[in-house]
Length: 107
Image (cartoon, rainbow, N blue to C red):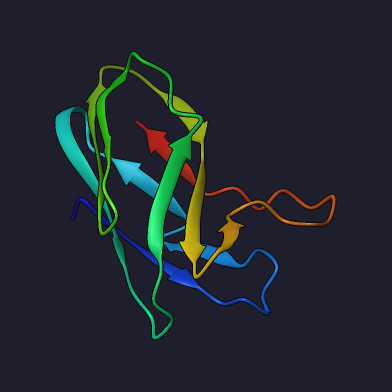
């Protein structure tokens, strides 16, 4: 599986969640996709935090985000996704001190 489902809950903390929260990437080169899920409509705005290398070819579209992961060694890579619903911006960051960022875990 290379898809991560992104959901928006405007009453949540964080408002944007990813499933799985920790994506365990297989060794080697693969494309990872983030797709919308849930019942609240939104458009993708950005994905930040994934360094090049091992990640490359980041493409943020309104309905999908893709990136290439050339997993050659172990590493944990937290990232932040931002979405728009109407004219309001929401993200995977929490408003508390508890870390809430989703992560890609290269093995």
